[in-house]
Amino acid sequence: MTESVYKVVELVGSSTESWEKAAKAAIAQAGQSLRDLRVATVDEQDMKIEDGKITAYRVRLKLSFKLEGK
Image (cartoon, rainbow, N blue to C red; front, side, top):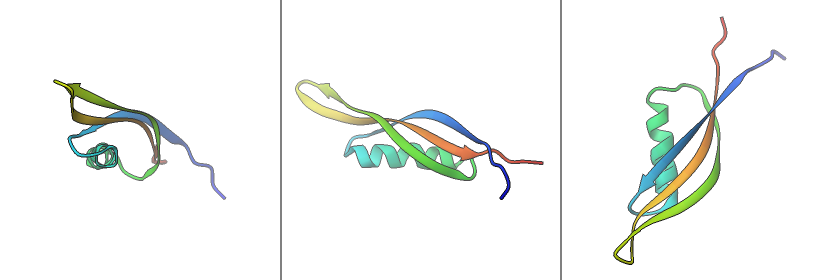
């Protein structure tokens, strides 16, 4: 088995509908510029509230991807 190296980046996704959609948005956006995405870990969830109403669901996550070798 060959050795592998992964990089971990921290992202924040946002959605007006749900935490799940916020996480999906972050991963979809990252997937446009990063290849070989591997694992996402949700570190924090919060909500933005304005005038007593939830206006956004936010998810802070760590996303790993495999670094390409030579």
